[in-house]
Image (cartoon, helix red, strand yellow):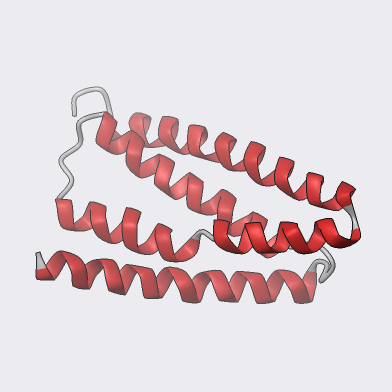
Length: 129
């Protein structure tokens, strides 16, 4: 139990640092007026979670500690739906259109990434697993 919690904490720390780096890079190199960094981490986080879920669904043996470290820790620290909510409220105060675009892009692209990741993970695990 303690090892699992430590792994979740380490994964969460790594995910949070990666999220911050992507958000800063996106604001600097893309457009500071739209939360591209949050969109990117939500989509990537859903893809990683989907791959892992697909591998698990295919029956691949995966230690509970690895599962917890990646799904709860890394993905939990990396994805930013709390930031998504706050940023959308901020966008809505100046532009309902931009807020709606942010919501639609995050939902549609993240669900598509989760589906793609699940299919990739299941296929990568192979039929015999």
